[in-house]
Image (cartoon, rainbow, N blue to C red; front, side, top):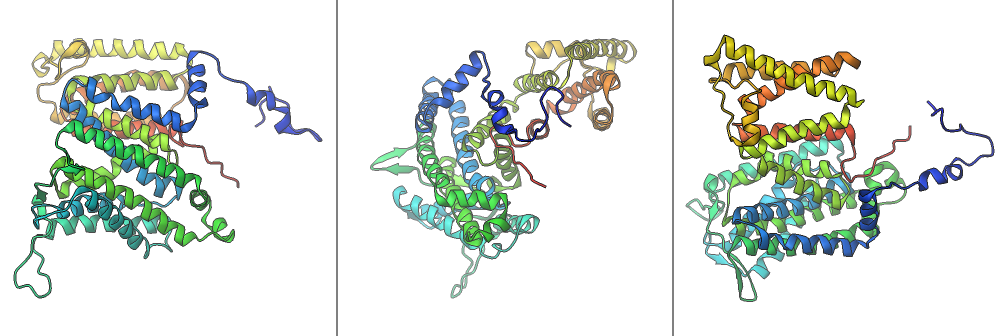
Amino acid sequence: MEDPGLPGPEIGRDEWVARADERLEVETGTVARAKRAWLGLRPPLRFGIVVLAASILPGVASSDYIVRVGVNTIIYAILALGLNVVVGWAGVLDLGYVAFFGFGAYFYALLSSNQFHIHWPTLASMPVVAIASALLGVLIGLPSRRLLGDYLAIITLFFAQAFVTLVNNANRITPPGHKTAVDVTGGPNGIDGVDDMHFFGLHVTTVRGYYYLSLILFALIVPALYRVNASRTGRAWRALREDPIAAELMGMPVKRLKLAAFGFGAGVAGLTGTVFASLQVGVFPGNFDIALLITIYAMVILGGAGSMAGVVTGAVTINVVLEILRTPDPARWVFYGFVVAALLTWLRPYTRLLAVIAGTIAFGIVVHVIVNSVAAGAARGLAPGGGFLGHWVDRWVVLLTNPTTIGNIAYAAMLLMVAVLTQLKGWWRVALLPPTLYLTAFVWENRLVSNPSGARLIILGALLVSLMNARPQGLFGSARIEIA
């Protein structure tokens, strides 16, 4: 329906020209000016500033744990960049991507460890692993080059599962001509004692050293991928992503483009696996499971598939948030901060927002008083993690002594109430929001805050669902326009 405040289409009137002033309007304010100044810089300069800022972290970090989180974040960012080539640029759904990461890590471990007493220099093993991973990507892409959508996803997912099965059982392989079994991958125990990386006599042995090594690798990969994206191949990938049939009709070698995307992505993943294997001083099958695949995909989706800056931002955001959620008190701040941010974003007008906040606080106080009066022995009144927010929660949320059964029932009730909320509108939704929010806090404090692994996945899922509803293209992705 046309906006009544704007003129409708007129004969002989160019809408694009008529609305030129409307498009040229700029945002005002300090944040808007800073954003325009940042975007006004050339991409190489912006990238240099980001790398320089990241290089400061080891010097200001208070412990090696923070630096280790930084190393993992950079590794995740490089993996997300490699996946972005396949998914974001070429539009190919690759669910076997983590297997290439694992292949690179295991191959490097075989070339640089005591497993077969081979100790290649790093400058020899890294290129060999990267090229072998890219060739494996092309090889895996060959039988799937004719497939699209779900069929391609099934094939690549099968490859990921086959890889995990192989490394778990390749500790008793009997090659032709041998009478005894040979241990190739170490089975479930993996391969330990992987060599440290060394370049020109310099051995990387500390977490801080691996941080700078990962940052250098990141600084080399990003410009390379940027150039590829700006090339004819990059433009062809984007055409393939938007409409494979149209791309093929325009004479583009669609099948070869798919294979190239598989090869580029696999090469980046395999190269990253070499750093990961050396950093971990070993490789194990559990390092390359489906959970890692979901995490990498979440980074790409959050940042915006197709945007290099977006997937890097997604990697930083998700990995830092997941680390914060490992301990109760910081996790509590993230949880309630997410709830408040969601209310501020979606609840309008602000009179409703104030009514919901006041109603939620009052509802919690009433429930707390009633439970302590009727069944005081069932509430322990001590929030795990403590802290300022924990002490406030003690006086607002009912904390049960044995929360397992009631907590599970409350979790199911919370899901039901959320489903009902999606069907209500107006003041009916506002009236149901306070008990729903309080029930959410009850479930969090009694069942999730003491279970970091489950809480991390639930919050990650909620973050992605919320973002996909508000901005389907991700933080930095471009909205796709479907023409009927």
